[in-house]
Amino acid sequence: MYSLVDRSKRDRRRAGRLLLEPGMGELYDRSIVLTAQTCADARAEGRDSAAPGGWSGLRDILNASRPGDSGLCVFAGPQSALAVVPPFPVERDEDLEGFEPGPALALMARERTVLVVLIRLGRYSVGILEGEKVVVSKSGTRYVKRPHRAGGSSQRRFERSRERYEREFYDAVCRATRDLLQRPDAPGRLEFLLYGGAPGTVRGFRGRCEFLARSDIAPMSRLLAVERPGHRAMMAIGAEVYSSSFLTFRRDPSGGG
Image 1 (cartoon, helix red, strand yellow):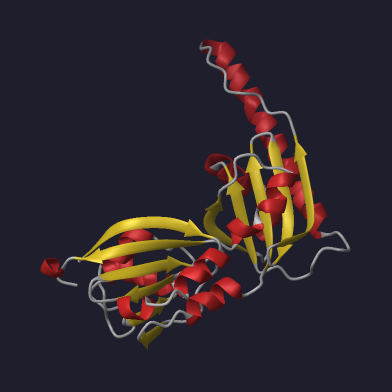
Image 2 (image 1 turned 120 degrees about the vertical axis):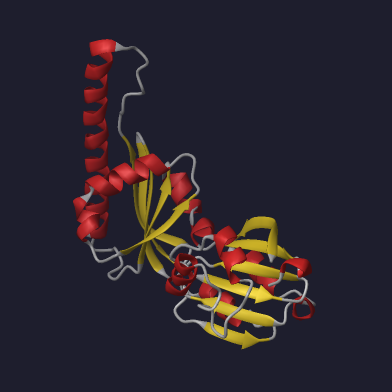
């Protein structure tokens, strides 16, 4: 069995430095790369054998890391394991002898063209990134009423009004996104769509913006961390887009695995 002892997020420069540290090969003697589908199959069936070659520690690590649609890179050793949730999807399963960080490093280093939508009620920023660089963007604000604490019919009227403001805000962000993608200087093919901001607001926007729902840009499930959407946040979001989650596990010999 494996117990989680540390969790951190690293941009791709810090991630690369860690994976290339001398001595990593002394800690880990096996490298396992898993697609999102393999991870999902293993979790759904509650078994370890979905990993290439089988591996008795997979369930513990999957339950803690929850890799979503990115998949997982795992480095296993006699005493510990290191799991890396990469920024973009693993494309094929691999089972490699020894410490082989190459597949994980390649996922972090590959330059992608992505659409990013940062949104909280009243504020938004939409941008297209090539690698970590923002090539086109649009930011704005729009008034949305704050929650009302009064009761009775007054509150119901207020809530209906607030819902209308929210719909109008979502529609404005959707139009801004469409206009941005149709600009002549916008890159053509986008690989992924990433959202950032407040989870509830992102859900509301995704349910309202039919333009993006019909597009062929693949949305990713992870949510980018941003407190105040706007031009400044968009210009700095590249490091977050390419960040990876690192989870360190300690092996318990008495528990198997």
